[in-house]
Image 1 (cartoon, helix red, strand yellow):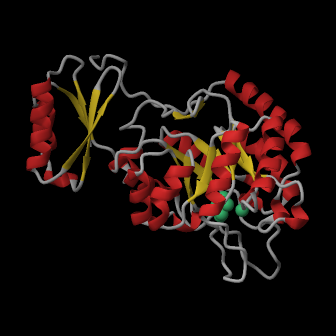
Image 2 (cartoon, helix red, strand yellow):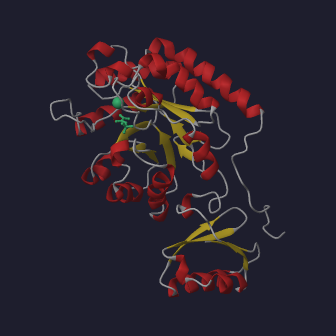
Image 3 (cartoon, rainbow, N blue to C red):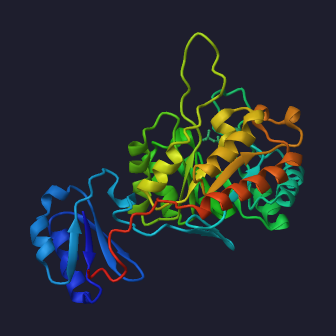
Length: 356
Ligand code: PEP
Ligand code: MN
């Protein structure tokens, strides 16, 4: 349920609605917008008398939200969420942002060298993994805190905000100290304790869709962040499990590009696409980057390495930094072209004063 207060509703009227929700054993989530206050409900809504709420003084309307991920739906948060990182604004009508860098942080020198190239190419955010989720215990596991130190130093020296993955709840506080955006990886999309702990750290979160998650499952886990009072969520499509069969799949994952407009329509959050993990192939990064922007992505995460043969992880999908400037230029042109048409993503249910 989304309870929309009248523009002229008093504090007492709002407090009465909150009391009503709490006395039914539920938790209110109050969102104070520019014009209106909207209240969401956490818990089993069947315990609330919908008609009674509708008749309370100061209530403009109460709408039932049909989807299970109520608090991340556009029926509840009706304006596009723009996530601010440093001086950057991500989402809404803003131009695309590019988060680029190596899969793994291997040394300060490597990260700074690649970081300088991606910055010159037009990237806005430096990526690099310090805690790597790896299938094999024999693979490079990441540099841990040392890697975080390199990331923070390189970000500062290059004047770029940073993003890195947190793999364990135990590391949330540490990662939050070093990075500007905390990534929750595809393998942890279902980890509710990690999600809630990360949300509580208060930093923006790049939340990757699991390769095995339906959209409604994905958004239900994203909803936990809103309930933990963090709306600075960047959703990220990074590919789903490819079809099996007798032949080796052509791509590492299947980048589900329809997820981009679906997420934009369903939710107000910025949507990022990751064509690197989505394909696993450097020759497919450019075409799928262009397709992602054309589908409405607010940004791209692209793995870049200038010496892919030496990369300690994901060398096969590492994009050549020399090719990055023209890819970013083309993507920006594409974004401009599609922005001139109609982008039917938002669904404002009420006019600004909520009175009509
Ligand atoms: C990554 O971005 O380095 C990564 C491991 O991504 P994913 O969780 O999408 O596999
Ligand atoms: Mn990687």
